[in-house]
Structure formats: C-alpha cells, structure tokens
Image (cartoon, rainbow, N blue to C red; front, side):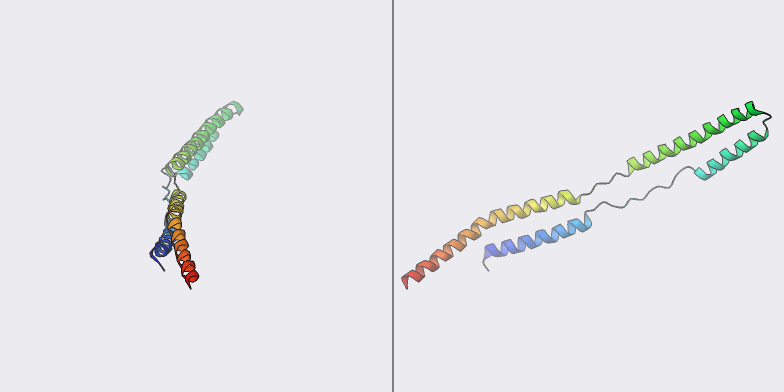
Length: 139
C-alpha cells in the first residue's frame, strides 16, 4: 500500500468516524421545560367559588346574567394567560439540529479528499502500468 492509498484510506476512515459522531452527538438537546408559574387549578377553583357565591346572592334573571358575565370575563382572562404562557414557553424552546451542516461539511471534506488524491492515485497507477508494460516488452 503506497502513501496515497494510506492517505485515502485513513482520511475516509476519519471522516466516517467523525460523521458517525456528528450524527450521535450533534442532535438537538432535550430542554428542561419550566413549570408553570401560575397555579391554574387554584385559579379555576377560585373562579368557581366566586361564581357560586355570587349566584347565591342573586334574586333574579337579570342579576344572574350579570354574575355569568363576570364569570365569563374571569374564565377568558384565565384562558388568555394560559395561551400567553404557552407562547412564551414555545419561543424560549427553539432548538437547532446541528447535524445537517456538520454532515454536509464532512461530505465536502470527503469529496475534496477524493478529488485531491484520486488524480495522484490514478497517475501513479498509470505510471506503474506503463513501467510494467515497458519491462514486459523488453523481455
């Protein structure tokens, strides 16, 4: 095995190992999701208890309509807070997969190694075959 073949063999082996490692290690990381800062269950119980207390103090349909309006407003505030918190947590959890650019770089390195050493390898093979044919013709 001549020097060019060694360079090609070891170079491609190193690139293959680096590609395997990049695929295993370079993936997106699992992120720790922060727990909700707001006690949603407690807030929902609070809304329900206020609704029950206000409904107990009503004495007719108009007053019940007003109480239902207040309860609706409370539920809509709770829902909008939940949506806002979900959007904030989704924006903070952006992750990038670094495997694709790394593997493309390794592919480029492998192609350039092949391109740089293939011509020399073929020239050496051609020279050796010409020398062998010259020696054979002399005999």
